[in-house]
Image (cartoon, rainbow, N blue to C red; front, side, top):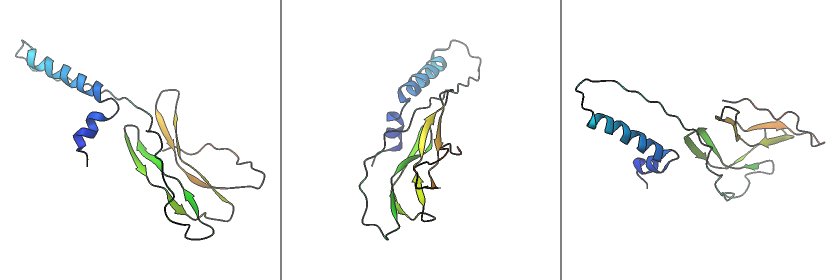
Length: 134
């Protein structure tokens, strides 16, 4: 089991966080002035989620209508959590699972499109794939 600090030090942007912390510490230690000043720096670096994990399908389908829904990264940039795959039952006979995915916008921010069940028509046309974002 890894310690939370080990995970923090190995996470994306850790080197930059350490450098920023050392710079602030240096300012405080080596300042010749006795006057106090408040300094606040907010640096946010957003990275994509890690690559998907390799999963094995667990057990056998609990019924003829069940499908395996693969795992995915959930959460928010910098705070991703792996959600394991599972057997799930479509809400109706023509249900198709559209897996969640992450997209990077023009502004460089990552947003997750949630997975959802959609109607599957027999012609292979799945319609508009734009999903609501959270």
